[in-house]
Image 1 (cartoon, rainbow, N blue to C red):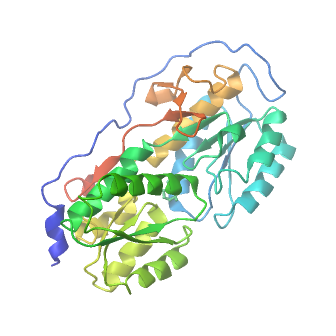
Image 2 (tube, rainbow, N blue to C red):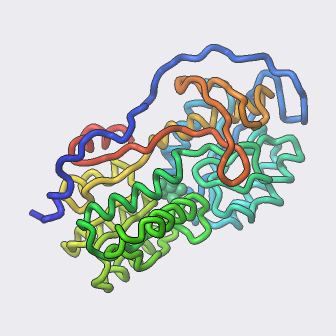
Length: 352
Ligand code: RAM
């Protein structure tokens, strides 16, 4: 039995539970403007989903929701993505999708800026473009689907790490790729939380940021390398792939280093149950894909064009609105992150 288990006690309940509120949803409004060959009043056509990489189980869950939405809408969902999380391969895929004449592209980006020429060409050809999970820059999209407030995620993870080590011990971050927009945004909020509360965090410095590239092998070796630094007492992995790899390393080595981050309950349940990870956060990945599917459909139908203030009905998620994003573009937000701990993990590991 590990001492870590103690940290897990007491804090029950999710941060904010707003799961799958089935609001039903009538048809919103007739489409009007025809602004390109791929926009159609009735929607439909091929809605392509481009994953960060196709090896990542998290991406597959997001796609599951996208596919559900597409089948309810009557569009054809298409799953694409590179083997490894690089922008170069995503550019090739976008070019193929343009040639194919899809109606829409929803992309989890491996780089905020590198995809701009390809995505601009897609939009010029009348293809609707959204990013989800990991944003492209505002010029490269019509709207971004944001899982949860990045500030809450970043600050929340540092606060969790602090509580887990009782205010004493170095922090390491095991991230995904160095260019990942979502991880980099969360890390910038982590750094802000540390800087703005320097006194509180005087004894929990950020010692190292490592990149596992959302590759299980690299994430494993990066975790092993972190463990050679005795000042590191807690690892924050803001990636499901990194979290699982780190959890396995810590468990194998019976390490006292504590783990938190963003993990899939179905993968992380054993580590939460044995105290390796006292608690962690995530949102519903299936809902992210589902919301992206409905957002795409509203764009293709011409019900929205991605401007702040517009609203549309996202199937069972009900009415959603477009708001300003921190990067200067616009976004649709899913909700608050959930907290997973020993009290609720048994229930959630069955869900996603
Ligand atoms: C990984 C990916 C993804 C991220 C989740 C939390 O699966 O990096 O982009 O949102 O973790």
